[in-house]
Amino acid sequence: MKASMVLAALAVAVALAAGPAQAAQSEIRVSPKEIAFGTKTVGTDYFDGVKITNTSGRALNVLVEAGLPDDFGFGFMPGSTCPVLTPGELMADGASCRAVVRFTPSEFFVGWHQTGSLTVTTTDPADGATNIYVIPVSGTGRL
Image 1 (tube, rainbow, N blue to C red):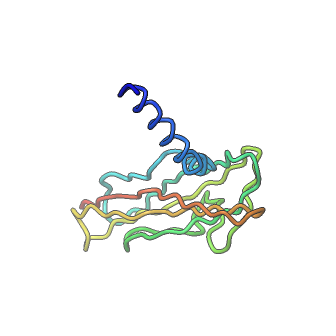
Image 2: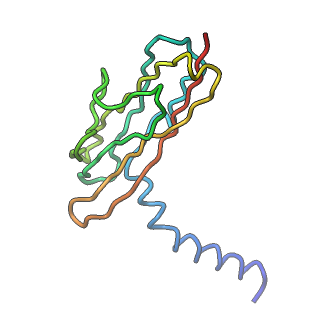
């Protein structure tokens, strides 16, 4: 067997093995892919967020959680519509929600590039399959 045929067969085998994992990653679309506040002035509240859209073709349970440093806030922020305390259903017909983060830089952390993340957990109510998506969050405070 020629080397090119072996490589082609190997590529097909890898693609087939990776198929389900790649399909799972397409259950939702996140836009933008991260929340980057950049450098902001101390003592002012800044809000930004992401739109999370169900692209799975079926209903999913969705929960958004956060692991953020002290200068950030998450939860019931203005404009936030995603479930944050208990999972909620995000319908399959292209339904979406918005997860909003607050950045209020403090003098204590001036000049520090702070990073954290939002975690979106989706669960298929039919089979219990769970997928986790991580959205980076960052910001730096200035005087």
